[in-house]
Length: 141
Image 1 (spheres, rainbow, N blue to C red):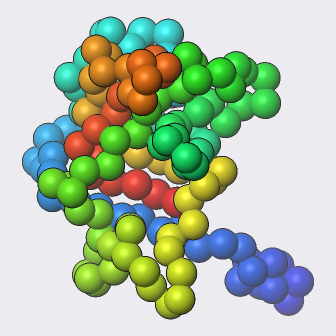
Image 2: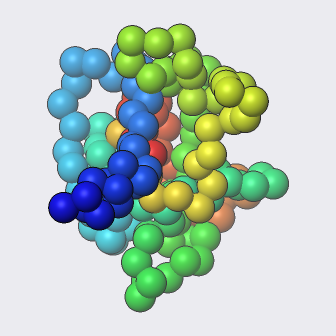
């Protein structure tokens, strides 16, 4: 039993950052594969989707986190974070992009769950992506 407690306490605790951006809108929870296959059907809709977030030089994208799926840019979603929708840990003034405890929030190459509005017409940076998710109002790391 003590071993289980030790492993449980070492597990990473999930962080949830939220914004008032899309409240009180309801969202549709969909799989990443469903979103990629039928992105036009979700255009202008508020959805929740999970995947692996990757950031870098001119990259802010959500990829399928399955090992057996394509990780090509054309099968990824551009993630457009906006200053109009600041994301904070509930009950605090700690923002997603705030320098805190000597570092920024680490998101790169992590599985995340995001809620935002799909824009099937916006293909992201250099029009390389399947579409865009913007007006992000929720992210779970």
